[in-house]
Image (cartoon, rainbow, N blue to C red; front, side):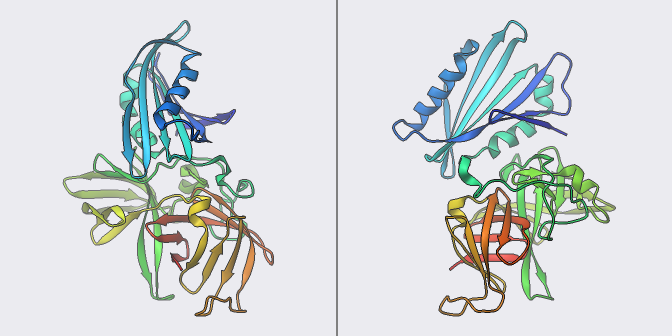
Length: 360
C-alpha cells in the first residue's frame, strides 16, 4: 500500500517498496488561485523557477502542453544532482482550469522502481485536477473508526486512511478511477447507481469504502463482514476477468464514446465515469427519485418533495448545512443527526447512493 504524509500543504506519496538505492516520491501540492495577469505557461514557468532555485539542475526538457477536456496540462522533466542523493530526475506537472492551478512533482532515482510503478504513476498524473482550497464548504468532513457502518448510515465516518482515487479515465485500454452502472430495483421502481473503483495496479471494488473525499480505504473494505466486493481485474482480448470474494467472473469488455464522454461495457452493463463535485457544480435545484435537493453557494441545503410549481411540500422537508469533500458530502439538517454519503457527477446527472438526480 502506498503511504502518505502531509506537510505544509504538500501531500507526499511513497510506493510500497523501492529497489535498493532507488527513490520514488510523489508530491501533490495544494491548488492555488490562478494569477489572471499571466498566461498558464507563464505561471508554470514561475513555479519551475521557484523550484529550480533550490536545486542543482543539470538539464531540462522543453515544456510540453496538452488539453484534457476543459483543462490544460503542462509538463517539464529535469535532470538534477545532489551531494547526498546523487543524480536523479524530477517531473513537474501543472493542470489548470484558468481559475485554479494544481501542481504535482515526481522525484525518482533508478529505473527499476519507476518501471514497476509506471502504470500507477500514469494514473496519478492523469488524476491531478485543480480543486480550490475552499472547495470544502464549512470546513472538512471529520474522520473516525466506524467499521460496522456504511456510507449514508447515521454515524458512518470516513476512516482517513487509504490510497488516492485517480480521476476516471481509460488508460492503456483499462479503466481507472470511479465509475458507476445503474441497477433496476423492483422495490423502488428506480434505477439505483452502483459505484465501482478501478486502480492501475489491478485492484477493483464495488461499492467502494472511502477513507476521505478522494481516498479509497482498501484495507477497511477488505475487513468488511460478508461480501467485500474487493478483488482484482485484468483485461485482454476483449474480455475482463474479475476476481473478488469467492467469485471469478469473465465477461465481454468494450469501450465506447457518446455525448457524455467515455464509457465501457461489461457484457450489457454500461459504466460511466463519476466526477468529483465542486462547490460551483453542485449549486442548483436537483430532482430525483421521490425527493428534490436545493444546494446553495453559502453551504446550505433544502430537501423534500416539491409541487409542480417548485414549492416545497410540507411532508419530509429538511434544511440545514452541507460539507462537500470530493466524492463525499455531509448533511447536517436542523432537525436531525449528520450523515455522510457518496456523491458525484456524470454529464448532467448528480449521483448519490439513493439515485440519479437531474437539474431542474
